[in-house]
Image 1: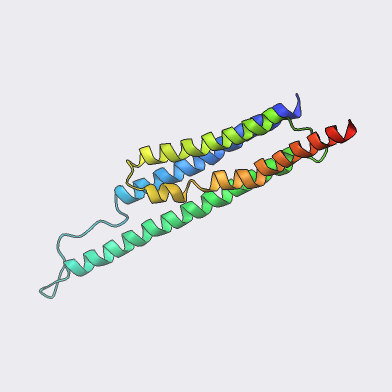
Image 2: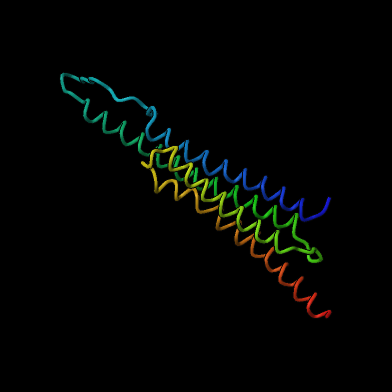
Length: 170
């Protein structure tokens, strides 16, 4: 099996994993925001004849809001960490100094990263009914950025070095 094919297969696998993290966390945030609350609102709280229902419901709203905020922060943090780890592992395991990289592989890599990133964004938008666009963006920027910086650019550089070495030999 040649290295070109192995790199492409691993890139597809990593893109699928990145996609699952991005879209999966977007869906979890959507469910947390529009689904059931962590604590349900109360109907009537009377203490010594005084109505404390508004105060109790304010505390419930504050707690539920804090849980949603924590969910968003942790989702963005975990997605960023996992996508970064996948990109680094892909880079370290597939691109070596003596590898020959073809132009078709560089083009395939760029197109796959772009298509995968745009697809994750579109699916995130459709799965949240365009209500959480800012959260979709918060969970969609990692894949194109890290995959381009950590994997694509070194691959492209390896291709350019290979073509320069070929021209210098002539």
